[in-house]
Image (cartoon, rainbow, N blue to C red; front, side, top):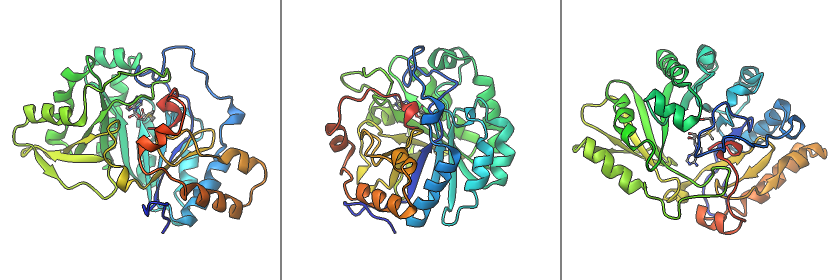
Length: 326
Ligand code: SAM
């Protein structure tokens, strides 16, 4: 097992395969003027595959592909196929906005994708359009149907945004009534690509829970998986569950088992850090697998205890979540 300097196991890698996205969610990216990385600055699939294999040998057993939007990168399914046979990698997961995903769901099921986080902030077509700046709700709902039809576990991720989608929370929560879906409500974070943020978060995890209780007075807590970021809740007559992710309040750092690689090959040992290792530079300067392992171990031995500590060690957050992957 791989441990960090705070004795937390590191078992989970989130890999952003691209910084590009086909939506423009206002809380994540500006509408225009986005500077995407030139292709040669992105890790190639071969480089990513090698890094995943090295990390799997070190003890990482769970991988999530994210982005940007992973399905906008050509060749994604071929990459997934190669990842699916890496020894030691027990779990493959994906995060997607669902716009381009539906045609690939059968292959995802065949390759053993264990769960998909589907980002969906509103079930109202006009509001979805307003939030994402694209009119793509029907495509996303088609992906949801495909995932359920192929028995891939689905978690819906909805960012809770003051003055934007509060009126949509009930309809989203109701998705769990008759379907085995985990609907997770996420505190908004400062990664909007513009470096501006509410001075005080208005929709904290406590307030979100209060809102869910107003819909379902008999809401019951449910056990969460080890290392989960969400607290889990269930209404008595629901098949699925609801979750609340205190992503801004950061209540779960003590059990954090995750590391991130951005599309340009920057290692993040905390969502809130500024990148702690330039893995792309190491790869492209001819590092051996032993060199990579040693560099990873050094980074894991200096992991901040909390997201607040990581944030305090860096300049102001100005990047978009699309460069990190969520
Ligand atoms: N394109 C994919 C998708 O939409 O799921 C993967 C990348 S996206 C950046 C991953 C997740 O980050 C999405 O669920 C999105 O809603 C969330 N996200 C982006 N910006 C955020 C912010 N400022 N606060 C909270 N969550 C955010």
